[in-house]
Length: 176
Length: 108
Image 1 (cartoon, chains in turn brown, green):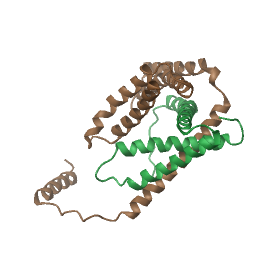
Image 2: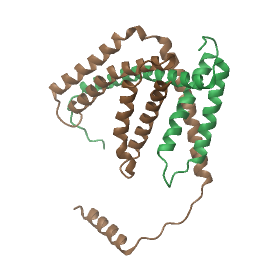
Image 3: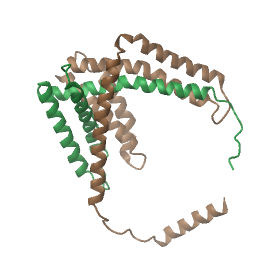
Image 4: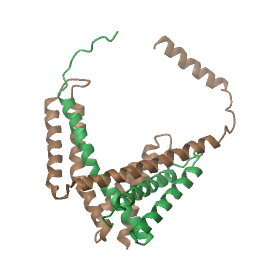
């Protein structure tokens, strides 16, 4: 039972880490995103031995996912950095990137005993459910925005703020 | 989960449970003074609870086990579906690789 609690707590940590990270630098908590994510993944992989039926299959899928996702993401980044989109083509980088992509596909085909069309169909049904959930969320957000009026009018700019804005505008308009 | 006509419905409810789970924790983690979160939180709790109850009734399993199995199957299916997305990204990468440095023509 303890392992099950650790397993699901790790998932919650990963969701919290993602949310913290995407809040951006204006919130202090954004700096905890990466460490929390690392903690969540570490707990998920190393502290959850001897899980029961629903969780053990999911853990296996997550491990398989890491096996192909890490070379695939690395390869994609290398290819995008080496492709002739903005600069010159880097042939060595492209070769390394494609090698990593091939490794990722080889990993997937080595797990081919788990490649079934019915699994894709399952994924599509669950995606429909996810979309329905998101639709409810967006409706709730729009209702929330509609029911809340303007709280108060913002204060006018102070003299120092005016000077700052004026300076920025003058600099921009002069082009320096 | 039984392999009858109710299986797609159970899967759709599982997807709703997963989205409610993620959105609720997202709302809790991103709370700030400018956040109007009461209606979204209430909506997602209701969505999650109704879906969870429906899955429990359809599968005949207890609520806690239904929650675990729904979340497990949803995450597992999403990880599986990522392989199809990976195939699409690979096609995009092939196109990028075959790009050449052509001069950009003036549009007007």
